[in-house]
Structure formats: structure tokens, C-alpha cells
Image (cartoon, rainbow over all chains, first blue to last red; front, side, top):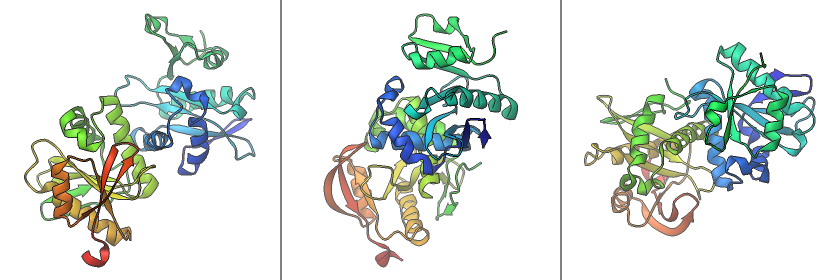
Length: 162
Length: 174
């Protein structure tokens, strides 16, 4: 469990299925090739649950302090075909504009570096995802312009600007 | 190292064990073969095969059961068999896949029988099915060899039209 002054992060568990279904079936997943069917989302969540056992890291459920409502999920991921670990997140409407996304993302990045001894996380995402772009700018992440050439994807390195 | 709480089951010639990371390569190879994968939801690209592999591990943690990896007594990875019931499935099923080079040795039959008995004995399941796409003659023959009978055709969310075979229950097998 990770605690910030605004939110609490738990490892993704089975009890999180129902709130996650709601998130994954929302229009907010348009940049994640969603929304998807209930069955597709079941497979998606099942694969995320397994990440902790496969890699030692995975997705976290974020809730506001003293509240059960799930705000969003965030976490690290490295499918077999990925060269590096990436950061993924999805926000619910309740999770926006409260600073929880900012704090949660920072907390995950610190945890990955400090607890696992891994490099800062990368995130690649659709450049049209303006909300995520705004968050990355707020986090002072570094754009990898080299990786961005000729693609529709931003490739960001997490970490403070030097 | 097992990634689940799966037991290790033994039969005369086989070991059924939980998925391990080394099982991914043969799984990806199987899914890359459009002809062989057609009875198992169709061909998948490598990244999609990884998601399926990871989903099976999640399935074990969600349900306490899933697909075992089939190993021969000499340690070869010969396929998978187990109990499968993701979202959208009508009810738990016994499933099987035998990888190239391991057909014709009754491996699927022996593994599926072992998984079925485990489900009845240890999971206290009272019935099991197998979902087979029309035209998959080898799987239909195997289901019938196991004593299963055709019950109905339905639409499976992953596989499309599927034939549901009903296996004999524990009252007949235990």
C-alpha cells in the first residue's frame, strides 16, 4: 500500500473488478482502444492481476483517503514484447482535477525506482490525449522526441527536468 | 517457479502443473499457427498471446483453477489442459490443446481426464462442459471419447458459434 496526502494506492485485487468494469466501459478508454465488451475487459483485468506474479509489479487501484470509491488505476506494466517498463493509467471523472492523478503517478514512479531499483518509467500515448499530455507536463516529464519521429505516439521519460 | 497456487497433478504419463514463464514461448508458437489455433479462438499475434497467457494466470487467481501446462515425464511441454470459465462463458469447461509434435499419443485425452477428475474431486464441481467450434472433428471425437455428449449450439463471446458438450458428472465417475 502507498499513501499520499490525498489518496491511497492498493495493489489491484479481485474486489476491484466492478469499479474497473465501469472505467473500462467508459468513453475515456478511447485512447486505449476502448471501450470494450464485458468479456474483453474481463480478460484485460485478469491479465493485469497476473502482472504482479509475472513481473513483481503491476497495476494499483487509487482511492481518495477515507473513501472507498475508486478514482483511477495506475501502474507499471511490461508485456513480453515491450522493451521497457511503461506507466499506464486511467482516470475516472472523480479522479480528475483533484491532484490525485498527479500524486498517484508520482508515487508509482518513486516506488518503482526506490523499491524495485528500476529506471524511471516510460509512458507512450496518443498525442491527441490532451488530458494525459497536460498531466505529463505538470509532472515535468521529458519528451523523447527521437522516439516520437513519424509516429502518432509520444514517448515520455519520467523524471524531473535537469 | 509457478505463478499460481495450482496443484501439481500426475497421471500415468503426464504431469499437469501451473503455468510458468517458460511456457509462454510454446504458447505463442501455437497461437501463431492459424490452422492449429482455429479451435482455440483463432490465431493471435505475439502480444495478444502474451495477454492470453497472462489472463490464464489471472484466471487461476480469480477462480482457483485454470489451464495447467501439460508436461511429459521427460519434461517436454506438450500442451495445456484445464478448467476454464472466464466472463461470458456459459459454465466451466474442460479444455485442451496439444502442441505440434505431440499429437497421436493420447496426451490431450489423458490430461483432460485428469483435469476433469481434479475438478470433481477437489473443486466439488457437479458438471462440466466442453465448448467446441463446429468442424473441429478431433476435439469432438475426444469429447465423445471422454463420454461427453452434444447438448446445444450457442454463441460464445470469443469463439463465435460453439457446440456445447456435456461431460458425465461426478456421480458417474467418482
